[in-house]
Amino acid sequence: LAAADRAIVTGDSESMIAEAIAAGLPTAIHPVRRRWSLRMALERGAAGLRRLGGPAAWAVERLWAAGVLLPPRDLGAMTETLVRLGYAERFPGTPPAADAGRRQPAAADADAVLAERLLRLVRPDRPSPP
Image 1: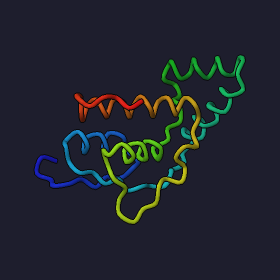
Image 2: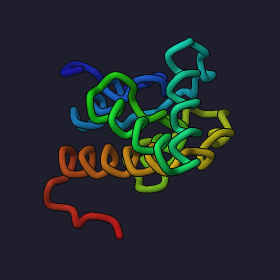
Image 3: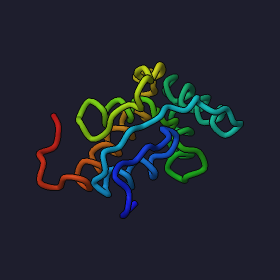
Image 4: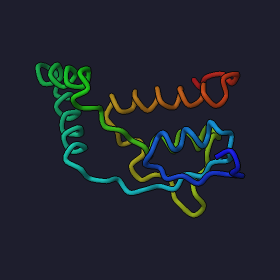
């Protein structure tokens, strides 16, 4: 990254995006289709159970706290947030993420925390967004 003029990264890796932005490079993010895996299906199912409330929500929150399962992520929404705040751009010719904004509340919270961490990393003197 030290010798690069700009970075083009795929939108399926928070760390790849964060490293490019933290290096101070103009960063273009190329969207990648959401992959399917059993773990991701379980995480989305668990988020659905959490929305039901009661004992199901309690059990899912314990699994999340223990790290057995993670809240589902919405990398499309993270990309859109970084583009909107001016830290990155969409790879030329790619539309906004189709699934951005369709996320579970816990994932929305995780995206907001990640975006805030990236902001503080890249521009510690810039005020946090509202």
